[in-house]
Amino acid sequence: MQIASWNVNSVRTRLEHVLSWLDRNSIDVLALQETKVDDPLFPMEPFLERGYSVGIHGQKSYNGVALISRHPLEDVRLGLTGELPGDEDAEELSSQKRVISALVDGIRVVNLYVPNGSSLRSEKYTYKLNWMRCLERYLRSAETRDEPLCVVGDFNIGPEARDLHDPDRLTGGIMASDSEREALLQVLGSNLGDAFRLFEPGSGHWSWWDYRSGAWNRDSGWRIDHIYLSGDLKDLARSCSIDKQERGREQPSDHAPVVVDLAWELDDDDEVSEID
Image (cartoon, rainbow, N blue to C red; front, side, top):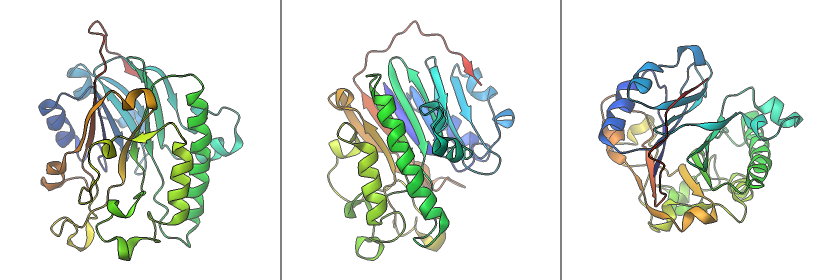
């Protein structure tokens, strides 16, 4: 099974990019972030015509997440309240559409668009840390069902120096502060491991290049798009890679897709369905 994560920075703007990428790659589940569209306006038909099942949780102009799957999406859960019903913080934080999860052939795929935080002195930074604390409770709740867990998305955090193109300058700032990194470690707990680092220990591997300041041309990127696997899936991981080529296309997203390949036997008899 191949599971991919991609912040597309508007699914309608980048629709042809997404469709052509899916046509060229054997992806079983594609998790999209920053879809930037209300659910009634999501471009569903091109995916359904290709035989995909689609789950969406969108918002006009901002945020938004989706799951595009060759296999049925079961037990779809929307927002932080999908795991934390009655949690007051989850209720408040779920007004921004940043979380969707589903069971796909027995694997719980959780798709996240973590807040950026803007700057260390911003109210958005406080919001980000509060959101991460709620996410920690969300994942601990999901883990109680003993489902194999694959957590993907744009985390807006470079976990270590090797995930930044200029760690001496960037460490301690937004997306690389001690508080954000500690919050991420708490979210992951003892069970979830970074799939990419199972195969590539070195630096120089980026998933995001800022549109500004010629970051792409200078290869001044960050690795902020991650795939995390529970212990039972880590042993099944065969590869994890970043498709950097997509960032070099005309009018690209500022992010590249990240793909993990799992030695997970799929049920060929699955039928697809649309999830509203």
